Length: 362
Image 1 (tube, helix red, strand yellow):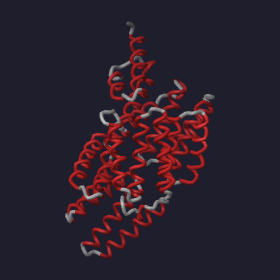
Image 2 (tube, helix red, strand yellow; image 1 turned 135 degrees about the horizontal axis):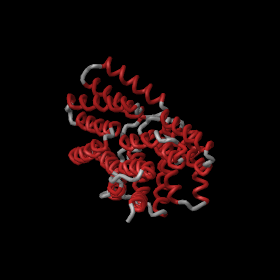
Image 3 (cartoon, rainbow, N blue to C red; image 1 turned 120 degrees about the vertical axis):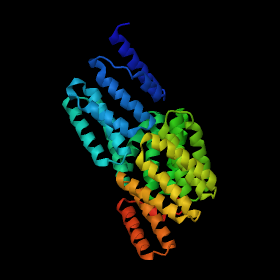
Image 4 (cartoon, helix red, strand yellow; image 1 turned 120 degrees about the horizontal axis):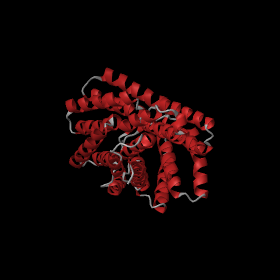
């Protein structure tokens, strides 16, 4: 078998593994070098496989490498890379960078007459709006896609949009609407036979029912999500499942089980290098230590979480950490500092359009 043909075969096989939800196998097929004509596609697929497992920072570095190549060498891959990297930057909370990448990609779309990409860029733009806290505007845009996907009986696409609208409604305070959207997302994912889509709809349901105080229901949703992702390559999703389940268990008073799931989540997020989501685990462990009366350990963990959230500019996490620290400091007799931190947490939440300060069951 000639080298070029061998390279093409491996690239195609890697694509098939990625599409089948096995990005780790796809990555293994891409370890060998390829002729320069195929290097751009190989690097793009490497980044896609890394993203599929949750290695967002590592994926971003490879995508950046892809964008250093002249756009005219392969406009399709260059535009795809802009879109993929924008999605990663959005996931990491870097919305300004995400918007810049969408602008660069749209310029290439116009220059090289690639109108087939416009709709996907418009959808990512709506998701960036959502990530930036522009919930009302993002819902208008996302619902247009939902109508189209429903008409076309694209149940996988509809499940994704409903998951996104559910999140926008949750963070804007419409808890009933969020629960409705997540239930619809779950139904659509089942029609599409999309286990990953089901898991993420269940994550949404676990989060919104916990905020509503339906703690046993929340625990059950997170448990079902964990079952669907068990043994998959989605390390991020598995870490998310353990953290969400731990939050529900902590609220139910099942502290030993909660700590075990936090620790499992901590290992997975650490392996991914995901500092912001790792901060959510530290925050949960800090809340657990606070409940147990271990104030020194609680303060250490909550300040570590606050540092992680501040590094990632994660507004919700910052407000949660500052609010928890305010309660802790007040319990320790430092009322003045507690009041300052509480006011700061409230300002951060309101500026971001969040209602974090009102969440008793988080």
